[in-house]
Length: 253
Image (cartoon, rainbow, N blue to C red; front, side, top):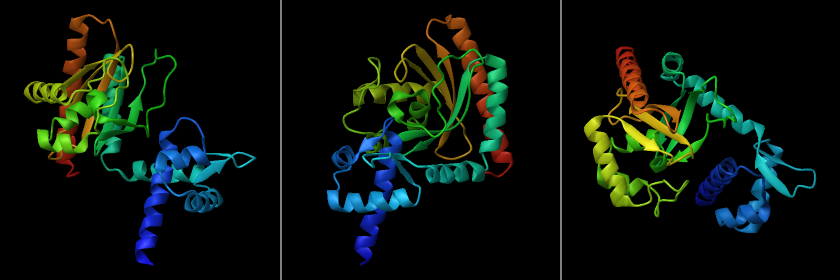
């Protein structure tokens, strides 16, 4: 029985991850196509998840989406993270200094998971970021954290092929490796419209773990003067290094 229990647990997690990654609700057929699970076992698992409020369904039970109990788990993770209160304070200070949207994220294998955000007060059409998980190669946050690893470690983590998010996304491994070398040399990452059209981003790793798992970024509109981008970069470096020193002093690992 034990292998079957393990398989069921794995399938349950994959179902929840698939639903969470989709912006729209999914039919059972779409879910089966994306997971590859047998329809019979998928149907039984979905019925259980709906009953436990981990999955929501419409009145006809034809489409499914992530349910409210999934939020409880995510909130618990944020509540128990000892680094997060210090990071949130840093984001407040950084936004006050730059006026731009700032993020705190953690690498999750070949992705980055957004844990905190402070939006620019002038931002329009804001896309909620907390809880979002994006491929590391498309964001400055992800690139600065991939740069903490060796090239072999990066190659083993990132998806193959590298999927584009925009026309500017790096999709060639050799080009990504070259970019990571530059990041290691200068100590910060810079991406231009690779993850979001019209947005450039600067990111710096928080150096309280080895290798660093967390990073802070600042998003700016395309078209800023180079001098302003340089000022923002200096601010991100200053506040992120200060956060790393604080976390080390507090003994947070």
